[in-house]
Image (cartoon, rainbow, N blue to C red):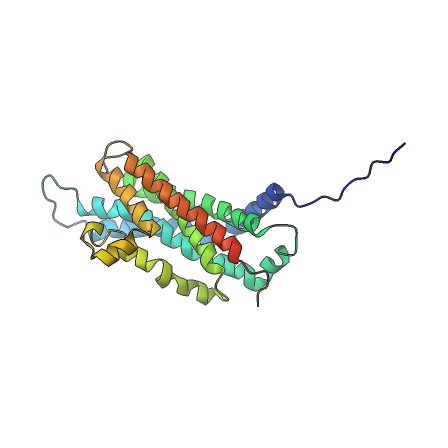
Length: 262
């Protein structure tokens, strides 16, 4: 009779990915300050924006300024907030030694970052839903298209912020350095996305830079929703571009993730 020899269990990507996702979600649930920042800050800023433009004069046949600016901010705010939270949280894992211990296990870098991305994306979805609920049903934000499309775009923008935050954290050694990436990664996109000046009116060289920044396509998608009653081909194209940027940022983050903290 031949004895059956059992092979040692190898890496189990799905199990490692699921364990990482659940661990981060448990940590988020117990961190009340972070939960408050994720859920409350975008909604509170939308409320502030509403009162800033409350007494701004309205012109017949034109949308309110709050409607025009507000729908764009529903995409920008989740992006900014999730970038900051993800970059800092990931760097905290590195400084505490948790990341280095995890990297000694069979888990791959991509599984690890995918777990972080999934956990924060769940938080991002909750954030986008709360911000859109406040904007549309409490503050009376109007758009030609369905609010469901705005929620979808806001969630994708937040996921993009998560992916770029993970990528930025791979190059930072401290939490302060992680925050310093915000002026490099976030603010240029804010200036060139079409919120302050329509992208078609930018100088040629700035327009070319704007064309390779993902937030520009997110804002374009939101503007499609604000002016069209249904989904348009341009909107889906823009969303595909944003999703592609998020996927590439996640892959680059895994490729550049260091195994050691020092």
